Structures are given as structure tokens and as C-alpha cells.
Image (cartoon, rainbow over all chains, first blue to last red; front, top):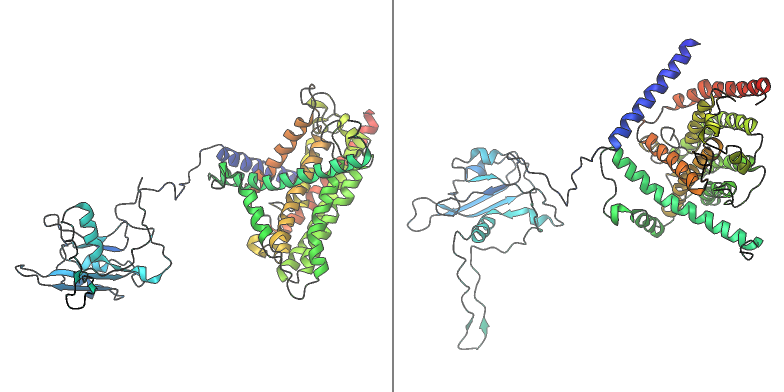
Length: 193
Length: 333
């Protein structure tokens, strides 16, 4: 009988202790981050999808299309094309496509790269409604970045449409062969606190 | 004022008053619950809809109202539809006899307490019918649990209420409050000279109230992690919404009753300025405690729940009943 009473009183005490603790937490400040309004600092070793690195001297891609990353990739999601420009000692990259739908973010490509020409980007909000947006043209992205930074002059203005003399039809100028029109990924916000 | 006291008008005003009181409270107690849940876990709770998420219940209600009411194939359609109403209406009817203040009560009948408990036992029926009519295995398990749980907890609750009727000598809720006039030591909760175990009696009443309204840690009927949503599994849209509102209406009723029986209703704790706001302060404190308890304790196991009732609450409440009777006989209080 005494044991049972002791048990009940002890149990009740533990309940009161629990309630005191939760009430203490109730009046403390909250600890959550309100994600769309606030963001946390991205840790320096964050492994996003890969991106090309610009050479700090020339402002162009440091990649010279050796294709080591393409070979290192276990899921075959990288396609690199390069060409030797006139007067250059090395080849330079002309197209670099990452199929992010297949990428498992293993980082083998970054490890394989001898000259640090690719690295992990810090983009994380990559939601999209279409699969095609994840086939990323990294070379185009790099060029866009360079243009924004003002390191290389903007692409020359498109040649004026010429009028066919014989028929009088306006022929639009062909777009630059290097610039493949791909839909831009949905607005990528990366405001870092 | 002569116009207001005519009987049909009085009826209408009471009806609209109770309905809007319950509706508003059901909506905003959900907000309190979610905000409380957030704060107890160091989160913010709803913040997006309106200032501090205050319009969230309205958004939720709009969502529930716009959803299709599905009656699954092969269910007993009449009972399936009746169950939410059966759950909601007793709570609404019972609130008619709760005295919010000296003069503010829809009806002042002399068996108010009896009426509340008579109507209160319909709740079990409602959840059982809802669970049975759903033709769903989870709902059936939930219905079976509800019946055994509520039978187990009705007994200590009624024993406690008998104790209170012995102490106050009346079943009229208004008179019960009037007998607790004066400062807080005249409240039934602190009348230790009548029964030294009075606070324990209040505790038993409160625990039984939690169990009767199927609230955590006794939410065996709607054990989300085990039974989907228990008896409410098959209900969509406002069918579920009414069950949800009824849960809060029942909490409101239970806390009002606890306030009237133990905490002196609309009496002031310092003996001056009695009024409706004292009633509301006490009641909402008890409602907050319900939320507080929910976010503190994990759900009990089912045998733990029945053990608590049959092995602890019923013997203790029987003991307090006998003790009260003996004390009243001996000391003529």
C-alpha cells in the first residue's frame, strides 16, 4: 500500500517536473530560421552542382577540355567539348554540359580535375517544374557570369539584318553558333546572411 | 430592455451567443494550440497568414468548407453523416447552462450539472458511431478504444462530481458558484476543511476531463501515429471540421465546468469585482494547461490508460467521496 502511494506521488512529481521544463522552454526565445525570409550562411565546403572556374588573369574558363572529369564521372552526366583556338597553346573549352538529373554529387570530377578548373557551386534552391532545366550549360553560365562581372566585353552586337537585294525579303542575322539558347533556370535566389 | 427579456428574443440571443462563442473559440483555440505547440518546441507556429498568423484559422476553415464531402462506398450513410453532429450538439447544448457571470447564462436550471453529464455521455456514442459507420479497420479500433476509455473515465469523473454535489448541496451551477463567494480560499479547490484531499479531487476531475475529450496524453481515439486519424479517418472536408470543432467545444465545456465546480466561476479571487472576465481568465488558463499538457507528455499506452483509471483514479475518488461524507457528518460543515 505504501509502495503504491509512493509510486503515484513519485509519478506525479515527475509529471510536474516535465511540465515545469516545457513551460520554461515556452518563454525562451525561438530558435528556428524563417527560411524564405532568413537564410543561414552556407558552410564553405557545401557541395552543390559543379561549375566552371574562371581564370583570374584572362577572365575566361580555366578548363582546357582534357575530359578527365568526363571520364571520372560514374554516372556519365558530363559532356565536354573543346577546340584549339588559333594562336593558343592549349585547347579551350567550347561547351560544358552537366546533366544534373543523373548527377549524384559524388565529386569525382572535381577530384579528377588537375588544374582546379571546376568546383562545387553554392546554389541550393534548384526546384523546377521541367526536367530540361537540369541539363545545365555550364559554359554559357560562366560566360554570363563573366559578362556580369565586366571581365570580358559584351558579345558584339548582332549584325544588322540584311535585305536580300533580289527579292526584298528581310533575312534575320544568324545567332552566334556558340550560344545555345536554353531556358534559364528558375530565378535562383541565394541571399546569404 | 423590456424587448430583450421577451422569451423568443432571449432564446434567439442565447442561441446566437453560444453558437458564435463556440465557433470563435473553436477557430482560435486551434490557433492557440498551434502557437502553443510552436512555442513549447521553440518554434514560432503560424506566422504567414495575417499578423502572427491570426487569419490562419479562417484560411483553414475556408479550405475545409471548399472540400468535397465524401461518403465512402458501403458505409452506413445516415450514421456516417450523423456522427459529427452528434458530437457537436451536446457540447453546444451543455453550454446553455454554464453561468458565465451572475446574470449571463442562457438557462439557469436547477439540475444543470446533471444535464451536462447526461449530454456529455452522448459524445462516446458519437465517436463510436463515426468509427463504426466508417467501415474502416482503423476507425473500428478507435471506436472500441473510445468506448472502453470513456467508460473507464466516466466513473471517477462522476464520483468527483458526486463529491462536489455533497459539498455544495446543489446541482444548480449558478448556486454552486454563489457558494464560493469571497476570496479564493472559499473556492471549492481550497476547501480543505471540508476535505483535505480537495486539490486531488480537482486533479482527478481535470485528468478525467482530458480523457473524456480525447486529448493528449489520452488521445487514443485519434492516435495519428497508430490509427491514421482513428474514428475520423474517413471524414473529409467539414465532416472532419465539425469533429475538430467539437473537440475544442468539448475542451471549452470541460474547462468551463472545472472553473465553475472548483475555481469559483465568476467569483473574484480577492473578493471584489466579480464578473465575467474572471470566469474567462480562469477558463482560458485551464485551456492553456490542456495545450501545455498535450505538448509535454507522450501518448499513454492503452493498458496504462486503463490502469490509471481503474487502479488509481477510481479508488482515490471513492476514498475522497467517503472522506468528504465522513468529514461532513463529523464536523457539520
